[in-house]
Amino acid sequence: MKRASSLLIAIASLLPVTTTTSSQEDIVVHSLVAQTSEVNPSVSTVFAVLTKSIESRSATVGQALSLKTITDIVVKGEVVVPKGSNLLARVKEVVIKGKDAPQSVLSVIIEKAVANNGLEVPLQAIIAAVAAPQNNSLDSDPTYGMMHSNEPKMAGSAGGASRTGALSASSKAGSNAAIATAELKGSMDHGLLLDPDSQGAVGYEGLSISWQLTTPPPVTVFAIKGKNVKLDAGTQVLLRMATPRISR
View 1 (cartoon, one colour):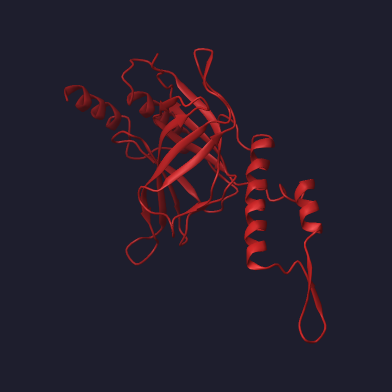
View 2 (cartoon, rainbow, N blue to C red):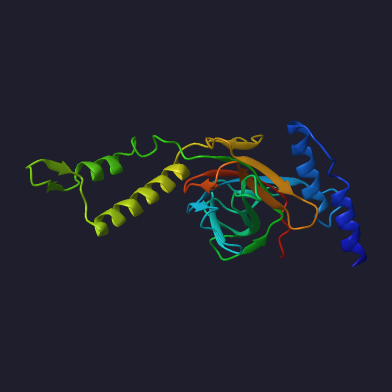
């Protein structure tokens, strides 16, 4: 208990009343470090991609989020969580803009990484930056282009006009699933949209990212002045974490 109390005091002491954007990054890193039991632990980064869209207007507290790593997590020169592993997270808080709330909020906690061999690695991590999927990722995809060109044509109105691409409900569902899969694959196959020093939201107008670090685990807070916080499938994220400890 004494150890836990000292830990919380150490974290709280790192949070000033106001900070500049550049100093916030240092505070986040040092706060993550303070949430480990090591005296001078290092900080690791990993890039990942969101596998399914999430939005505050339909999200619930405790809802699971899944991301897939697109780079390795390396500890002391050893790959402990390889590219293609799953990162598991959950929704901590949801706020919908209204009379008593000036903005919509979606807060998440990163819990652990699960490698392909089943190894589970607990994480103390925050999302430092996000980048929206590139709009042209499907237009440049030859597979999607071929699918689109082969969409069935159906007779139109009684006036004799015809429409192309008018699909049944089941066909639309299948097409939407294929599009989502293509977007996710495109985000993983294309180059990184962020770099290790990135911070904030790229391609999401009005979206801000902050962190709650007063008590572990660290919480990443997405907020917007509109009525809905939405992160699309295929969104790339940069995570910063206290270097994970691997049990042998």
